[in-house]
Amino acid sequence: MIQNWNIFIQLFIAAVLGGLLGLERALAGKTAGLRTFALVSMGSALFIIISETIGNNYLGIATFDPIRVASQIIVGIGFLGAGLIIFKESKISGLTTAAGLWVSAGIGTAVGYKLYSIALFVTILTLFIFTILWFVESKIKKEVNIDIEN
Image 1 (tube, rainbow, N blue to C red):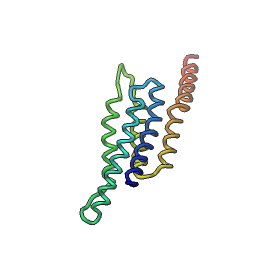
Image 2: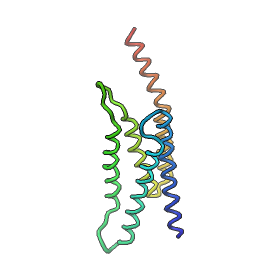
Image 3: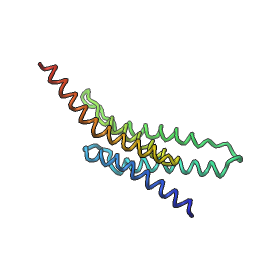
Image 4: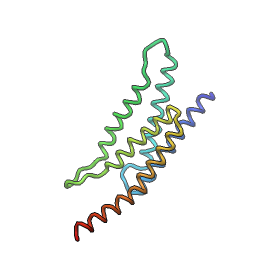
């Protein structure tokens, strides 16, 4: 029973960390938001927890590589992210959100492997990239456009 509570806590942490990224995306008016990011992060953690549990239960009985599950999470999220990317009139949109969703899956995977400090650090770093670097990028683009026009 205690093991189940530890798993529940892991899933909650993954959902919260992914949700933080999704909240930023929702506030930025992007298509994938809080629920999507929370589900991707929590789902990734769930798949890792399941693979580790099954791996431990069949240790020495069958060949099972839990690392393969992590690699398939990456592939699966690639398909989900591709659906977020939109090409319209030679402009691309949704790429940053798709990349963020991919990172959210990584955060969930880290939580699934109990790498909490790494998951928290990557969440903070991703929020920095989503927010602070957006302002820096906007300022640079504005400066470049002014210099080109003069």
